[in-house]
Length: 256
Ligand SMILES: Nc1ncnc2c1ncn2[C@@H]1O[C@H](COP(=O)(O)OP(=O)(O)OP(=O)(O)O)[C@@H](O)[C@H]1O
Ligand SMILES: [Mg+2]
Image (tube, rainbow, N blue to C red; front, side, top):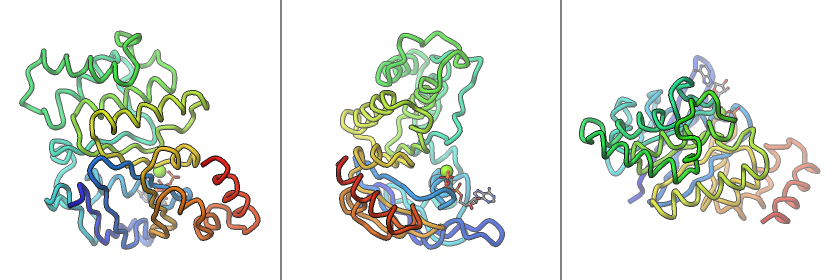
């Protein structure tokens, strides 16, 4: 059984079909890359899985339970966590306090005593490499460290499924390298399944077990990174042009 099953999900905004009959699964301990051009429905899908939106049609099944109509905060208690495309940290709280909020919520809500939550917070802060700034207000941090705070807060909720919405955007190549190693660690050492929405192709290809491609709300391809980087249809929706597409296929093959 898959950890997550998204089945025939359709989500409309007025006349716009943001998601059109999308089906996908995420396995236990799997890293699923979710890619597609701007406006293809990636964030909407994260929002449907995390409970921000209820789809007009289709179902979301998590650990065998239908959660299509379950409230966001309840999904977080069941073990679903996410980060946002535009980072949301509490600027005047310290790194530690930001992450502690996660540790007191999610799966542990109402069940964890303060010193256990603090222990958990220390552990997660160390996992993402923020120990040296843990007492700084979040507003003093650079972009990468803010993204790490958000990631740490999501992780502190003790999820089985973590969804990352463009957590690499705006980072330098060496910062991307570091984030990828953290993402791998989260899966390898903690066994957490990950959906990673990402535009930085070499990064998502590098870290994902499997890739799903959306275009205009529809799933147009699904496969291993190698299969996707050889997929002419995928390259064409990204570049709209055969020549550019072929260049893309050659480049991703060189980087693989
Ligand atoms: N709350 C909303 N109200 C109306 N339209 C929306 C809303 N949210 C998203 N959309 C529209 O739905 C479509 C899918 O948007 P979505 O944000 O899911 O795309 P995306 O794949 O995450 O794009 P990007 O790569 O630019 O982040 C777009 O056309 C977008 O304008
Ligand atoms: Mg988006």
